[in-house]
Image 1 (cartoon, rainbow, N blue to C red):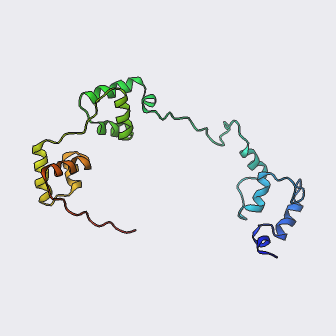
Image 2: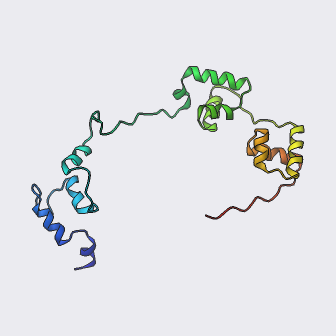
Image 3: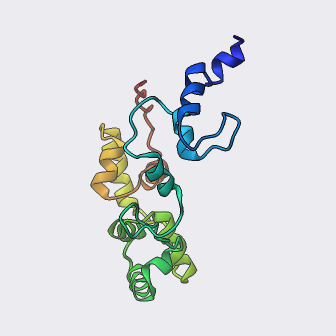
Length: 181
């Protein structure tokens, strides 16, 4: 027996079993998907008979509970939210509420909400950190506070804290070494 014959999956035993099955012609004959499970699947008991497996493979109405159809979900955020909600968000963003807090409330990505608001004509700008707050952050950082602690205390993003510290001329510490998994 050659290596190819050994690894092809068609052993004499499998050929014999295929010949014994009713309704199956020779090995070279046409196969149905459910019939191939005997040849290529693990020798475990399947929870379906071959007929049931064939019926599952047939596209059509699944109202009997076999599966539920996938509902189309529109990717465009403004269409998913609807015009009333979009108008409310535009009003709140123009009133000064941060995109980050709005996105967190809606459980959507900041970038998606920012893009939608810009398309609606809202001017989005990065939050400006006052000079007094930046100086206070620099003092705390130099006293040993971490970036994460400053972000949490001031309610700012990592980038906003970093820009404020650079603006004040704070000497940045080396980051802690990462753990190797």
